[in-house]
Length: 397
Image (cartoon, rainbow, N blue to C red):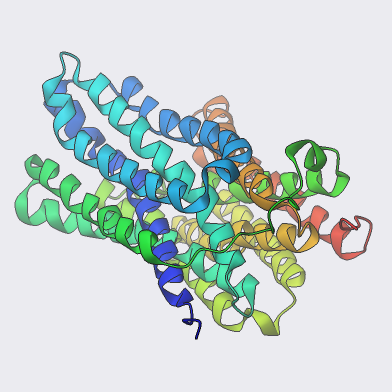
């Protein structure tokens, strides 16, 4: 008698995978001032850390499109968790062992960024391939764990530093590394199904020649930019608007943003099968436009902060929803589709905050003016969704 596969273990492993990605993305930035005080690393150099992290993920996204199917999903996702462990542990020790501590930091960041990039590409198709009902809702719920991971890293690290002091950050890095270490064993034993039967996946060339694929790329760029333009500037916005400390600014800004984004994804994960995904995303896009307008134009700082945090709820469905629509319209897209969608999302996540920052600088370091420029991303996203809904863009036959 064939043993029934327990896909709940697969789901748990992917949840922890997204938490691992949140640890990789959010832990080092919390230590910028500590790095500055310990090793005298300039702020200009410290700014390279997130740039190197996301640039590494972009490279991994592209490589995954070509080689993951050959290597295999299980080997690749286990390698992702192992690299995440190695990078976090090396971050605790390598800077002290090298003549240039900053070089040790960057090496560690590159290693766990490779793991994070693999997780970003692989966990979504692994869950998509499982025989779950309401896959769009399941995808939204999966991506909510990145939000809760971000909140957990910010709150957990803040509490640790308050109790034990920032000088013990190396211990905390090793503690966070236990999450991907535990998940190695989950991925070794959980059932993993192919996203598309062998030999039936579209090649990268076929995807690039498919018109509707480029609409999904634009959707992902706008989803990443809409989310990260506000998320990356939320702390600075909260500090400048409310004139509070960085700790309070982090809790009110990025932490509040992440909580609302997570709640949005959980809500759709539970009740999404009762709602048309495209309609929900259009409404979310319109709410995102309103949030950007409120944050950038409100004269009362508290209203601006409400707009900032409310934006978290509005962008919650954009990334996972775009993936769900894409996989539904291009069912033979396979690994290449998911990898290129992740690449597009990361491109938007890099370009959006950069545009906001440059516009803010050009307008005399006015963050609100910079945020107003970010409104173009949810507007374009809504227009693309309306075009898809009206049937102007047809799926693959």
